Image (cartoon, rainbow, N blue to C red):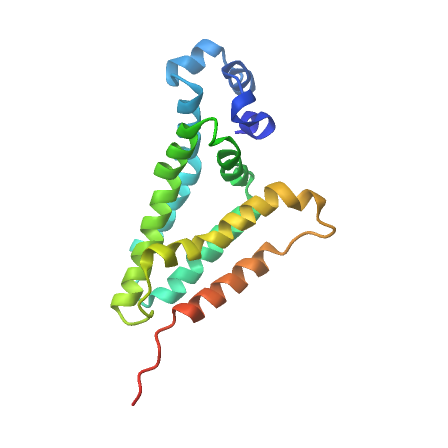
Length: 189
């Protein structure tokens, strides 16, 4: 990850990755056939695992969907505001034009899993009458868009911010606004 973070995908070399891992380049090739395979493994072992952990937490949840949705978004927001892995989405966006496989890998391993998790929660909330009926394919992206903004802000603009940005405040404001917008309309008596 540190090699990708420092150099970007295009400039990262397998020699650099092997050196940082303190192994020979041949050892790296025993486990990974390409730089793309290293990237996939990195994403699977970090971000995809994180989404899987959130999905497991959601599966064990009993009760209303709104508090679960709040908790998951707050956990993701905390992760984005504190983890060095936040550089991965920025790198994918920056390099996707020249390396479309990066975007495909990231979409398969992280994006689709996140969309499935949050889409399922939204659908359940709508079926239970907790949330008003809205197009899930749009609402799920609205759930996640501020998290992507926070990641991009942190990796791109934060170094020139006059004061540290309040990512927790952003996520809390987002969650409150989102849940109010999803709230089922009161039925007339």
